[in-house]
Image 1 (cartoon, rainbow, N blue to C red):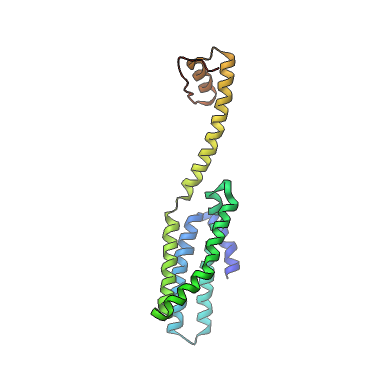
Image 2 (cartoon, rainbow, N blue to C red; image 1 turned 60 degrees about the vertical axis):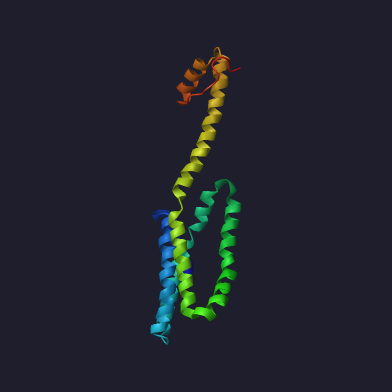
Length: 193
């Protein structure tokens, strides 16, 4: 189910929102299905079919983390390689953090305690993801790029205004404002040459 739902959660993430998909279906979903997997075996220890179904639900919700790649790339559009490296580092860290949690807490709290630790960690990931402001980060990146573009155009128009007129502040302001609706401040006493 994990492979099939990877594709589905990519599509769902594009429609429903990446952050919401990861927080709701990934974090919260994995918290619930982790406990469902454990407790399905506690209530019916010899029921293989129930264990497979619970495992399939866990695999499906685990695949809801698929949009994390898109989130990371969007948060650092000019450093996508570094963003993906950080994502992969976090994903691969579970290969040693998970067994370390089991090694430390299994003797203390048993299997149920370890499953609850994993469920709480998934719940924390849901909260942290929900608190991310991906949409505003994307707007900030776009605004920064647009600002760079506008400033570049304002500089070109300022040079054109100085070449056309007397280089005074009012002439430059009228010229630039007429083309970009931007006010360029310059020192009043000195021409912009």
